[in-house]
Amino acid sequence: MIEWFDDLALGMRFKTADKLVTREDIKRFASEFDPQPYQPYHLDETAAERTPLKGLAASGWHTAAIAMRLIVDARPLGPHPLLGAGVDDLRWLAPVRPGDVIHLEGEVIELTPSKTKPQGIARIKWTAFNQHGDPVYTVTPIGLVPRRPSG
Amino acid sequence: MIEWFDDLALGMRFKTADKLVTREDIKRFASEFDPQPYQPYHLDETAAERTPLKGLAASGWHTAAIAMRLIVDARPLGPHPLLGAGVDDLRWLAPVRPGDVIHLEGEVIELTPSKTKPQGIARIKWTAFNQHGDPVYTVTPIGLVPRRPSG
Image (cartoon, rainbow over all chains, first blue to last red; front, side, top):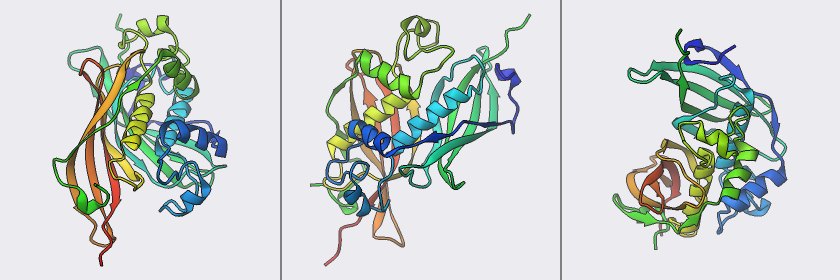
């Protein structure tokens, strides 16, 4: 089982479960965090038609939050919590629509052991795909992973 | 009023309103999006004490969502919606605790007109501060802003 920084290897791959994104989910998240008052394109179908998204779509931050939940549930580090200093290369690649089913695939792209602490930085590039196989979102968290205790 | 890409200038600054982050907000968001099942450090005070965060703190994605809401409400582009291709340099700089009051300050750091479309890319570096003035989060969205229609 993958558990410690030492268990990770470049090119190692992960896959999450699927998540259905409903119209109600999209509007509930957007009403709290992304209402876009002048042109509520995450809340209102008519307003959404007039934007470059051409129809109702999830807030990008909603997609990011759903992705976090799917990754957390996949437990890529076994019993260790996922702790990050930030993320790089966060991109929204295509709209996430009501009824879409999202999953993520991840690949370990960089492993850097700390020179001073019993941990390392693991970069796993995650990409979210919809039910058509289209990539909709990508993010590379800067994950802090403890090293296996010696002895 | 700032409204179009043409109205923005390098060094221009923005400031959002304040937002109180409650213990209930933190646990509600985390239970949906960031439960960290083995060590629920956004949900459980005791589990949180055992992490590097040393106490209950908001999910980083919750902080990101709160930041989006504060920025949306500040309407840095007047009536235009905020649309982005992604973000760069997203970093969680310090824990956001129950009872913290957060606001963001932004500065225009890059303006790149499109060569093919009537729009430009505006990079505004936003930093969130708590009530002590400590920076807790920073993000630089890649904003798509329409140009002023000519004639």
